[in-house]
Amino acid sequence: MPEFERLATSIETWWPEILAFIQTGITNAGSEGTNRVIKTTARDAYGFRNPENQRLRTRCATARRGRGCLNPA
Image 1 (cartoon, rainbow, N blue to C red):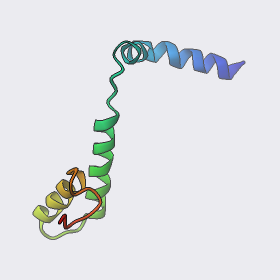
Image 2 (image 1 turned 120 degrees about the horizontal axis):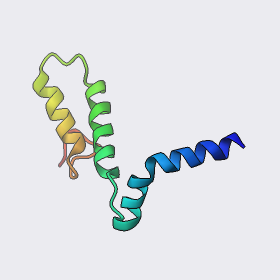
Image 3 (image 1 turned 180 degrees about the vertical axis):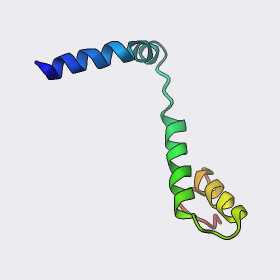
């Protein structure tokens, strides 16, 4: 079956990474999520006249205390 052949090929290709996760339990999911938030926020802020505003908006979105709001209290 072609689906199983493709799955076997994918597993064989990614086996070192799969094995590293199995052995350590460590992933890069946190950094990937942060990168996604930064890219989305930067896209939303595109066109700001002041690049500092875009940087501050991104920083606020990725800071734990300020996540989800532009004016953390």
